[in-house]
Figure: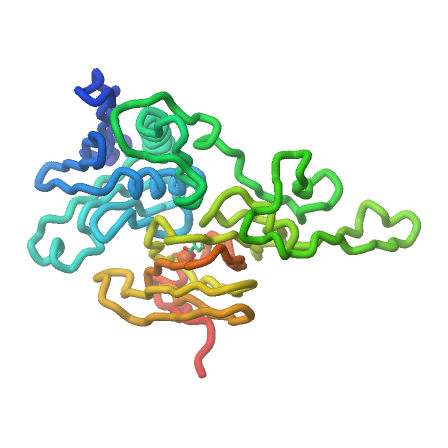
Length: 328
Ligand code: PHB
Ligand code: FE
């Protein structure tokens, strides 16, 4: 019903720092030189604006992702896959107990539009929310131009597999994907394919390490191969995952290179559950009832393996499948 949804308002005039304010889901968003301010009917919150923009960028690029995207331990979004819940304090024990939490349901198209507009207005020239901190300029200061190219990158989403005919193409210097400084030692040779005559367009193969070594962005899983609902979503990581992801299904992680430390917390309350150190070759299953945030001291390669079946969130919620994939 339309009346279940909370609408957005038009952007305001610019403030003294040159930025506009935005409203959606009964939340108002303002920024100054250093901070993003979020205000809802019974509360308010402040975040460093670089963290806010990095989180908002991923929320938009992933179209609200699987389950919960916590921008931090107070603010975030829940993907209902037909609408989005915008919340403050919903997964924070103290806010819940004090009854200061706020949740508003908004149309996906509406929040997508408002978040895109915030990103466009608040991202200054030279700041790239997808880049590692050492590969971008600053997010801070008064309004200084824009960076529409960085915030509107097309997301890689293979239909079958990168390199397959008519699908996502391999990366190279010529198409704007030089090898990253931290992956200079990654071999760039490609497999040789000897297909039976007539099957040339059906057989494909590529060097995933070489492909990832040429990624220009961090913490941005992209679909490189698809088998029905099974999606291989590798990504290159450096510094901190800009969101705390609240799972609505099991996710498998394969650490392809280097090391990532994962903070794993209870999805509902944020209570600490585990600290997982993943070294190259390690495999972990993240349960469906947790939230997690990763720390990668050096640029690393991570394979995130997702099951995109639309049936899973309900199976987990109703208890018909357990939150963990294996019981030892
Ligand atoms: C995750 O939430 O599982 C996730 C998100 C982005 C990444 C890696 C993992 O880059
Ligand atoms: Fe996750």
